[in-house]
Image (tube, rainbow, N blue to C red; front, side):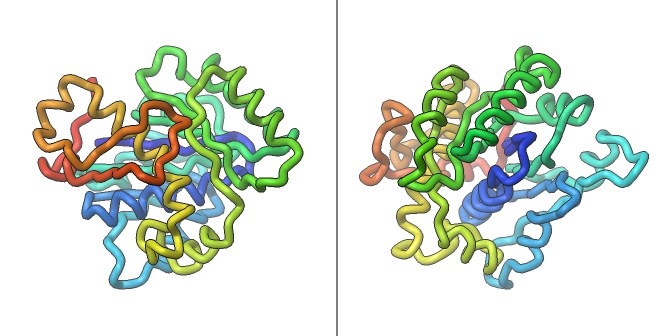
Length: 263
């Protein structure tokens, strides 16, 4: 199954905003989607409880392990075997064995960071932990960074850009501190499941993440054979390209009915 891990050791980076909107997108394409919440606060699980009856089903996995439970047991107990896409909402402060296990099981790692000096410093420390002790150095997982909860007038945004450049990791997009995301959470929906005219800006902000994931899948020779029709998917030439006039679709992904893990 395709697994996307949304993680940052710093709380308040907006992980749940990303996980719920990614899950909502894939579910809206009628792809069998699961959302695994490792956070004891269970924000993603609360979002699932608020989903309206007309929304596509997303399987919820409350993976915050009880005291004494093993990571292996938690993961196997909650995810249906026919899941195509799994979105993982990692808890703040993830490290050690849990961090290693999450990295080992994932295909893509998205690191959201808020543009404040405290968040930037904490994320820098986390990235070091991710590579030195989390297994990211030897993992096949693709890693990218997302600027989250950004305000256009933020005086520290330049510092955030310098930090991202120093990581030498792809910087996919900037996600504004928009009320639309709050409205989506209150409705138990993602922005791709809401009125397109109202959520156009938010959709454009999230599309580079989806382009990045799909682009790496289509780049694999083993994946290309599985998707004979690709005319609906136009990938940007660079991560900084504007996406207003570009089209993205997962119909080619769902045509086979299954996702296969990259080798």
